[in-house]
Amino acid sequence: MGAVIAAGALVAAVGSVSPTAAAPNNNSVAKLTKAVTLEGVVDHLEAFQAIADEYGDRAAGRDGYKASVDYVVAELRAAGYTPVVQEFEFPYFEENSELVRDDPATSWVDGRDFLRAQFPTGVPEGTATGVVVPVDFADPPVPDMPAGAGGTSGCTADDFAGFPEGAIALVQRGGCGFAVKALNAQAAGASAVIVANDGRTGLVGMIGDAAGLEIPAIFVTTQVGLDLASTPDATVTVTVDFAAETRVTWNVLAETATGNDANTVMAGAHLDSVQDGAGINDNGSGSAALLETAIQMSKVKPNNTVRFAWWGAEEEGLLGSEYYVENLADTALDDIALYLNFDMIASPNYFFGVYDGDNSGGTAPAGFIPAGSAQIEDVFERYYTSIGQPYQDSEFSGRSDYGPFIAVGIPAGGLFTGAEGEKTAAEAALYGGVPGASYDPCYHQPCDNLTGAGQDAELYAALEEDYDLVGNVNAFALDVNSDAVAASIITFAFDTSTVNDVSAPGRSHGAGKSLDAMKNKLTR
Image 1 (tube, helix red, strand yellow):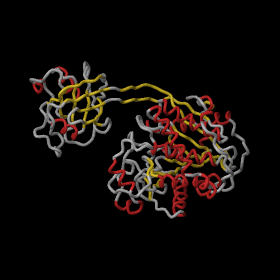
Image 2 (cartoon, one colour; image 1 turned 180 degrees about the horizontal axis):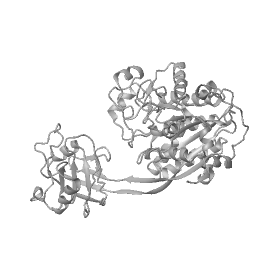
Image 3 (tube, rainbow, N blue to C red; image 1 turned 30 degrees about the vertical axis):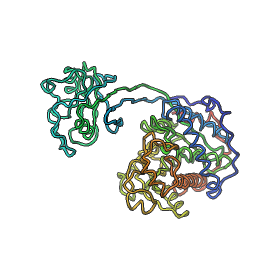
Image 4 (cartoon, one colour; image 1 turned 120 degrees about the vertical axis):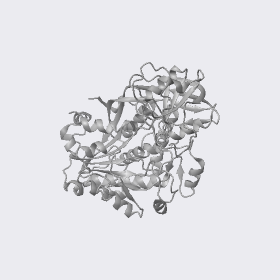
């Protein structure tokens, strides 16, 4: 297993972080929600933005993520916690491939509009600039072209008759393997090859035996292919550039000084961003609200131990939370009463979503949701009702860091304000905002920031007619949900009986709270 190390070993300059104000004993929902302020949460978001400004992003395996870990650790230490940093290895991938056209100037998005080849016999890296030459491309290219209309484009050497040396070949999917098309293009003198989908939607990874291929090759959507084919003689640059290696990253854990270890309440949020983005809503919002809640609970003496977690490498596939659960000592795993997850809680075109623990929406398969999750959902719903705010079910899919917990039978719940999905007219009537637009128009994009850089100006102006936005953060949603985070945690900190029938937990005054004891929990 990876190392579990004292948090101070990772913090380069704790003194550079302003000391956290001593929190009073915020031992009730009323006290804690008053103490957890929007200003305090936004202070943490500003720190995350400053880190991204300095390092480019906060993605796992990169310097910006390490700086984010350092910041959270320093804030926790200043509040009186003894945080632990859990190190683990993960498969690191870095994609820097590009597809750019000079005239009309266009830059397509990796992962949305195109993908590099994934040939198991080798994926040539490099950059090629040249005129795009369609090869036996469907004529005329039309947007509703049926699947398979690409025919046998690029499947034979004859298709490339008269192909100009150094040009970039544009072929269509269909009729033969991707590798055949790419090798034929190379033999004809192409400097790169672009394979377009054949009318079907989406992207596919190009595979096959491409031994001997030396030119960059990418796959593009049907629409991008039609766009390129409709602008003959356009100069395009194709870049295939990526890294695949093993790197280390970290989870951050901290728990209350007192409480019953045998009935631990866990609350977590992923700390990492996607590459090339600040990750302010996804998931600076959840991380910041959780951090401010922990700070304001530092003097609370709960009945149940409360363990806070900031997960690494969630964007790579829930790797941090998965690693934690897999490496937790069996007895410590049994001691977790429930898990609360906070991922994207301030989407600019928000809805108030509560994980559907009772499966009233019928979206989860039978047996997927652990018993007790419905009662967690009830706590969030009661809170929204108490403050007069609407709410709705959010699919209980395991898509975020609660997935590894429910996989081992731990009841879970949490909040979500929406990602790439589109807001309905009914939701707009409830919450305001723009129907038909994404809940987070900057989801997994560089414009998920506090500055507003890169946003769709027209759309965000429309959102600002209804909302107070700070960059990609809806201030109202963040304010309400930060209190919902605090309310749920403090509720279960004192009573989990509705979830697991533990109605009178004992209290351990500091037992099991030492650094060594916490390390021992993280050992199978």
